[in-house]
Length: 478
Image (tube, rainbow, N blue to C red; front, side):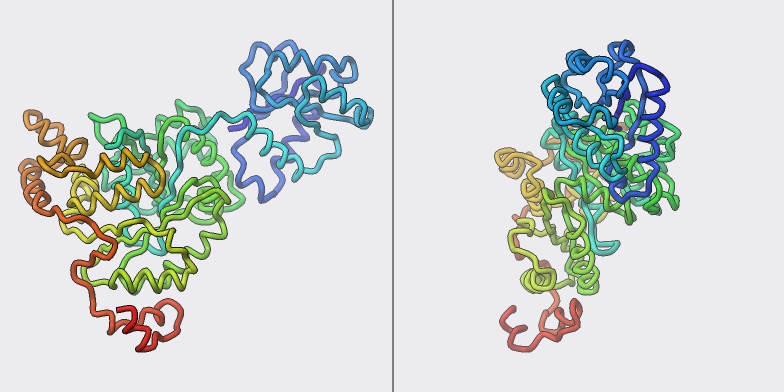
């Protein structure tokens, strides 16, 4: 939330400025979709020292007409807050603006300013006040449902927690709450978050913390934020839900090292807001030929909404044993989506039967999978620059003596045999899972494909773009 304070001598003058600002905020401007909620508070100059430093301070004209030097007094009280004099016609001369600048004014706001110009000023000025960001926001998306977004989000969370990062997983599947249900993060429908989005509660750290659920009671590194109930306002561009969620994300950014978002059913203004503020976007595809067109189409649309500083990483989730060969999939997807080879994650997530049973077990894809799968997840974390290179090497080194279990679900099981009530798995399942996972120690490779389909029988290009792949090109790829 952006806290804006209007300071002037008389209540009448302060009221006029506040009314003007509120009229700007009620305007139907597309820029407002990407601006956090703004609170506007009128104060007399004498009251300013009894309140915390705001994000932006607007100095009214009555105070400036009586004594310009009041600006320097206010600046000494709130040195880190942008100070913006509100200029009437009598105060708009170049000489007065020059004096205001020398006295500490950061910008000026003429009385004939338009709503669009005001919003642009607020965006720029609020960024000056904002503290240095401590965390990174990663959005995980795909072309259609069922490609493994929820599994990858959960796996990323546990992988990062194992490397000592404090992580929160955001479930934005408003319809089915899959991530929350699979992690058993109750309540599955987040009424506290719903109250915030409906503006029945303020966006404060205390209120946001009430929306979070620890994934494991014995760990303070991994949290989940279940989604609110599905409502039309979540998708309506005229709703304030997207702007309010932006304020919630800013709070989470200061509380956690990493914020990982399951895009779920987010769309419209809500999805645009997520894309604009994301540091990284992981786009999931899999080796199922029927998903290729949807993946190419969705990726093309997402690129147009990404912020300039966001990095895109494409991850192959080889979730089906009878899918396309890795080389054929990558070659055709790169061509159709006009994708650079450097955008791919280093390793595909290999098919693993044990990992597919993570939902509802108390673990994730990362702890249930084999060594190849964990290597793929760790390499994705490194590609997203969420852990340092050295940390990544330490995370995948020496698999002897089951050292990879440390910090994972199975590691907790081995260390807590005397406290079975703390385990989320049913009794006896831990040993069964350990036996199933331990023998699988193959190292992941970029072209690993357990049981690929004969690609000579597949017309991949036709699936994506409707253009048939000629026999010579097909033979060259294989």
